[in-house]
Every structure is written in structure tokens, then in C-alpha cells.
Length: 431
Image (cartoon, rainbow, N blue to C red; front, top):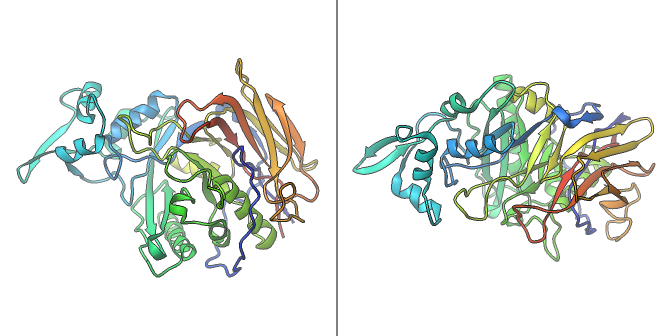
């Protein structure tokens, strides 16, 4: 038996959902590079970053340099501009009227704000076909301004925006790329088939370039497109967004469908208990699009990564080794899992007037998917304070922690949102 990795996942809502019937035929099987045994994480020197944000290169409403400037000024160590089906390479000219149409905000527009930040000579104006426009800055041009070794890094990324049967969106962020990954557009193929094909292409790109590439499945509940069963049965899937700051992605689910965190627990229960696969690791992101007002704004979710160095290869390798946690505001100072005793210990940064709730969550081997108390994603124990420990039950498939702050999120994506952090699933085993 191979002992598994650290574990955790999000949220206050622990509704028990019945697992749908699972077709166990795996579409593809790849070796999974994140199967390491790193268990103890001193997070004081880790790197904070966002892996999902959009600019004028696709459907965002601000210049890439202005978006990067936000993250640079707000304590991030790295950021990925993950525009749809494009890298910020080469030339992109944009009509000024089209830029202004996207803003939908009262006050200074994107162009005025950019000139105020970088100077009148910064913007490259060009008139094409009698239309006044702007040549957008590339990622390399932004690197010249912002990157500094060990202090700030720009991660090359793409949101590979695939489409499956019925127009279902299957969006996957690919990090640390060298070239664009073509999207799979196949309205005859199932979601799982499209997901597997896209992940296969991303893996091939990594083999071709010789660089580590990480792919995380985005917002599974967007348009209710991706089920826990879809996530579970695609063997090469390794990462999924458990929190996405876009208000329109149905994060909490509804009366009949599970939220993103519940989807994570269901998928991981299927993978470990029924398919002998490792669990998915959870990522938190912004998915920001609007920067001049609007409700898809930055600063809502991120990852904190224990990389050896602040560069693309190191960030991806650390995440593949599960050396990261997801957060929407809570800062963790240590995560430790003792493989001998099965004890998971988590500590949050103390803050005046703030109380933390630690929910230790998992699924037992004899789970009843329809049960309220002993079903999927059972809360084994709840503790309060700045730190908590709990020993994984002998019959548990995995153990994770959701840490919830008493403080409300300063920029919520849903009503009543509190700041949270999620560790990765730990204590799981494969045969």
C-alpha cells in the first residue's frame, strides 16, 4: 500500500449527496507525477499566487500590465494571465471603441488609468482601417517591468476552453506553457471524453517541451457542465478548482446539486474507494475579468505554494507534490501530517478579534452516500482556536481540513462569505 498525500478541501456547507452510478472504464491512464510523500509544510516562506485571470487578450476588460500591477502591489509573488485559448505572445491590436465598450464603469476608463500609471508614452497607438486602436503589451514586455528573481514572477498560462456535447464548457487552465494548446470542440463527445482528450494534449505538450505543466479543471459547476462522476473517471485529472471567485459559477450548488466542495469530496470518494486512483488536489483562484467596478474582480482566491524557487518549473513541481494549500483569505503557518500516527495538524496565523473554525473532513470506507452524518464528506470533528489536530479514523479513506475565519470576506463572491483555507487530502492509500 502506498501512503497518500496531505489533504484538505473547502467550505462550511457539508451536504451529503448520493453518488451517481459510475462507469468505470478509464478513458486514458497516465502516470501521476504528484505522488510524493511530502507531509510537513512550514508555510512561512511560501509563495502566494493566482493561476486564473483574464485580460484584454481575451474577455477581460483591462490591460495585462494593469492587472499584473494589481497583484504585484497586493502581496502576490506570482500571477498567471490565463486568457482563453491564447498566450500573450506576438501581436494583438484592439480597437479603442471595443476596449471602452467592455468597461461598463463610471469614471476613468482603462486607457486613462493605464496612462496615469505608466505615462503618456507607454501605450502604443496604431490606426488600422481608419480605426484608432492600441497594440497590447505581451507577457515578455510585462516581464521586463515587473519580474524580479525571488520576488515576483509571471507564470505563462492559458485557459483551454473546450466544448463537449450540447455545448457544455470544459475549461482547463494549463500552467507553465511554451505554446498554445488547441481547444477541443466536439459537440458529439461527452464531457469526460473531451476532458480526457484535452488533458492528454496538455500532457503531450509537457513531454514535447520537457517542462513540467500543470492542468487544473476550472469551475465544475459553471453551467452545471461537469459532475463529480466526470471528474472521478478521467484518470489523468489531478487538480480542480474548489473555489473560484467568479459569482456566476454556482459555487454553492443548489437545492438538488452539490456545491464545488461537495463535488470535490464525491469525486475523491469515487476515485479512492471505487477506482483505486489518487484524489484530486484543490485549487482556489480569482477568475477575474472586471477591473473597473463589476462583480468579477480580483483578490478573492489564491494558492500558497512551497516551491524551491520562484519560477514556473518550481511552482508546478511543488503543486504536483501537493506542497500547497488553497485560500480565500485565511493564512496558514503550518500543515503537518504524521504518517505513523495518522495525525493531521494545522495552524492559522493569529489575528486580533478573529476566531478560526477547523473542520476535519473525510469519507469512511463504509460510507452511506445518502446519510446525513456518516455520508460523503463527513465532518469528523470541529475545533476552534488558532491551531487544531486530529487523528485520521482507521476506516477513513482520506482526511482534509477546512479552516473558516470569523471574518467576512472583504470582496465576497456570494452572500455571507467568510474567509477560508483548505488543505489537500491526506492519509489516502492506493493498492
